[in-house]
Length: 101
Image (tube, rainbow, N blue to C red; front, top):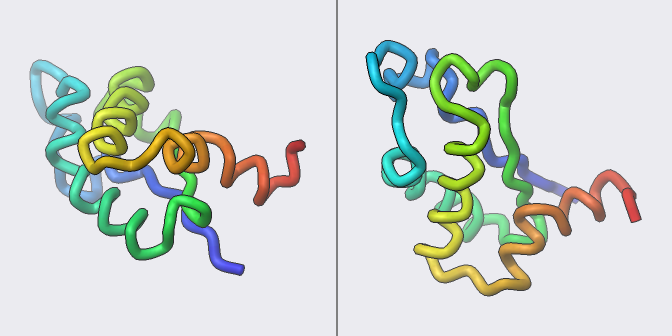
């Protein structure tokens, strides 16, 4: 009965330092910085128990909403998750957990 929401890593107190930069990071850089942590968590719990999420508006000081979600897409493709697994990560698990459908 354990499910994991994966996100919130771009918050200033976790040390990436994006908020202190003159130019904000792009999706590829965010994926590079947090990708290994995302991938480890997904592999440990399985896509059927993980939900990718944003921590907005808190993350807004470090990264834009679009950049963050595109980073999620980059990581899940790069790590070789199937289309079905990606569907679980982006919406399927949340629908199950929150009984949306």
